[in-house]
Length: 571
Ligand code: ZN
Ligand code: ZN
Image (cartoon, rainbow, N blue to C red; front, side):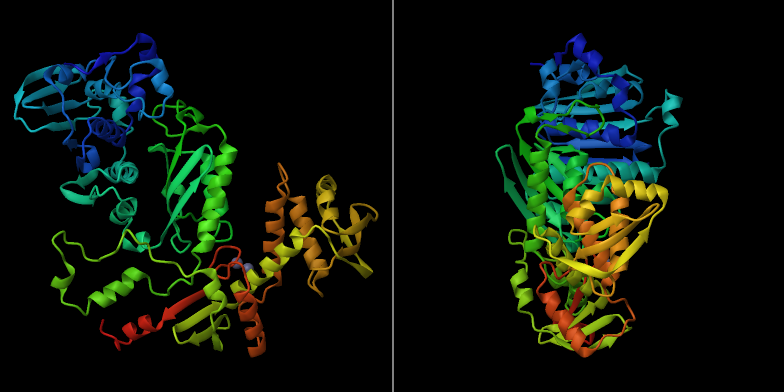
């Protein structure tokens, strides 16, 4: 019996047909999502010239009978969407079904499909059925698209280079493979393997198969539960950073989505763990009641609107922040992949290749136990000296440590300033000689708008002539000898406040700015006594591993790494 139903005219109008096909990746998306709907567990995507020449998708799903195979290409027939309400229900991957006829109308399609024991083949060009007949009986579907946009030159122009089309398809399939780790995905281009997942159902293993061991070994598992949301997945340690947001991969109810607030929660949680403009790799699933999610913004876009977004923001932010804090440890100077390479180079190769050609072994079920912060606090470091005027060298029985003196002191200062800024009760210091600060007309006006912020910090001041203020008292924690410089920095931050005032962000900004200003710089000489003081203070920090801009403060060469490098150890 046919599973394709004719959908209502009303719904058909909601979906502007051609809108869903704009590049090779959107054709792949349509075909692969059809395969998933057909309950395939193995999906192969073979491209020629990034899909410009040919897109072939082979699956082992349930296949179609003869009637479905023809109906699948007729407009307004779809097995996926039955009624209006379904459009708003996130359980469906959305909007497909309508795309297959529109793909067929602008390309040449060969379809071979088999349900149970009858195989059907169909050949369509420009939407016209050229041939239909029996085909060999291998359950599943093989669909080949060639000559994409051959009859719509205007569209053809918009196809990009092979490299760009391939990059788009790869990015899409990688996300899908992470979304569905239980499905085996294979992507090839010009008969060269791009990536393959094993369909193990294990997300961390899928991350390994797509991004490699260096990434997968540095992922932290997260889990959180609230009344409305459940979050599971993995986030990268701050050592693994990318230059784009493309690796912030989020699924809601197992559907790839994009949402600025979710990205903001992730980015804010990494605050001070990473530099601005760098992004971690994050793969998370958010489960929620589908009625809280509005997906119907645009058929090809993944943007969604979420009710109770503030609750989700807070849950995600706190979960990631806690997970990062719990996993803090000193980054190894030698990445694990490198260390393994060194290790492997001493071993007979055969020993490292099992049947699958896997080169490295990694236990996906027990992520390595991170060294807890408490352990850092008991770390004993013996300072040896300073090199390049910047790096403090220390050692202990585990290895050699390099500490960036500026970054380390910046961290110490930052936590001090932040602690003081958070205090409700402000102790103030009266200035014997008041400090006069002259501002430009516009800066003076901006300062006036937000002066309560300044007042609350413990500053006592008065107007003093045109665009000038005179400071009589300041909070006690300003560094002695640097009061004027500090005050100017703070006023600068107040002048630049915009939009909604966020006291937490403001405090952090003040702390970071002053921390950097007041820290010893590279090439500033520090004595052995000062080094010991600095190390002591660093140990006491909440996060001793990063400066507030997210740079590392300390890195380690383990004894093992050193012995490897000097070839003292052979395994
Ligand atoms: Zn700095
Ligand atoms: Zn810094």
